[in-house]
Image (cartoon, rainbow, N blue to C red; front, top):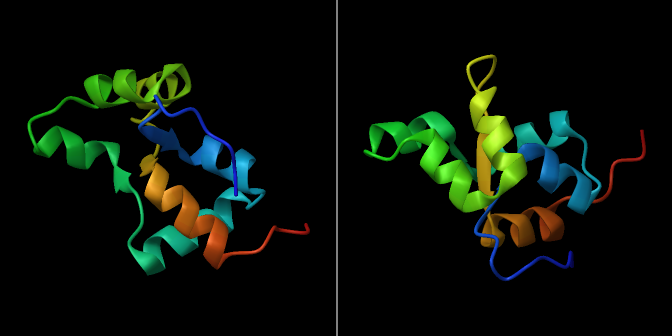
Length: 93
């Protein structure tokens, strides 16, 4: 199980990848197949700006939200992080 700060509510794809040892390609495929995480753009449709969501998530998520125009970025909750850890082994490539 990864150790995380209790104050951190959301994690970017990069953070989840580094905490779990799963590469981004496998993480994205797992998230898509298991319906984990949510897109920053989805938060915008819900009436919350991506920047507000990312500020609540932390500095790295904030930077990811600023560059989200380049590609769709997912944010994961702590629960999603634990599910990913349980379902998928470390990547060996």
